[in-house]
Length: 182
Image (cartoon, rainbow, N blue to C red):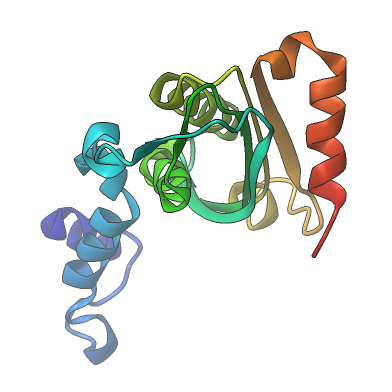
């Protein structure tokens, strides 16, 4: 990968012997591996059996989970927040595991619509929840730095599964709780 970055830098007309660029191909390769580390992670390893028996059958929400991903179309970042809600059925998942699941899928080449669905389906599969809701709001550098160059644009996507999809009151509770701040 380091050689490929060196080729790209040469292709744009830069001099790899310039002091500021001497180690850039190596740094860029390391950064790209870090930004796409989700390919090296599995849900089973990350969750690591962090499911705990619980009598709770009320909505659990984790909101404002920061996420950083790369648009699969331009390899430019999109940055935002993910909000996850679920209704447990006999077990709850460790709190940090929800954020880690978000990271597994965000740290891959992505489109936001698919990312939202992947997170929702995974939370549903892992927890066996009655319902799952995921909302992502993000700013896309491919729209801000190039193309239409709209600096204040943001994209919101949602995935509603189970009772979040079939029961309007559950969906409304989720959305209302997201607007409540501490």
